[in-house]
Each structure stands twice: as C-alpha cells, then as structure tokens.
Image (tube, rainbow, N blue to C red):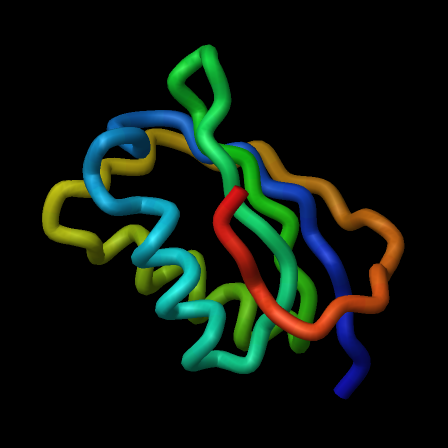
Length: 89
C-alpha cells in the first residue's frame, strides 16, 4: 500500500489536554512519521505520513482521548517528505 502525507488542522478543545503527546504515542505505535504543534489561535497542526488506513486509525484514536474534544479537522494531502520519526514541535 502506498504512503500518503496529510496536513491536518484540529479545531476544538485540543490544547492543554495532552493532544500532542497522545498524537506522538499513537503515531509511533502505528509506524507513522511527521510532526504536531500547537498554534497561537488554539488549533493544533499536524503533518502525518504513512499508509492511509494507519492515518485514519491515528485520527480515531485522538478522537477517543478522554479530555480531547475535536470539533472539526481541516485536511489536505501534501507531498511526501523523507523522515524517520514523528515528533512534537
């Protein structure tokens, strides 16, 4: 299965609730690469790369977070990047 890369912007209660570290843990466990960071407007941006099914598993896992409340996600596909891991910025 081919890899894809998605740029995602998460809206809702996504800062101050462990979102970035939950994302890193899930991404590492699913073999995904990329990054996640908080933005000044209260959103969280993420670029994630891997098999599409694994990216959707990551998104499902984030939506099940105890304190995380995602209202909506803006997403677009972006070009692949050579990288080795997923990290918090």
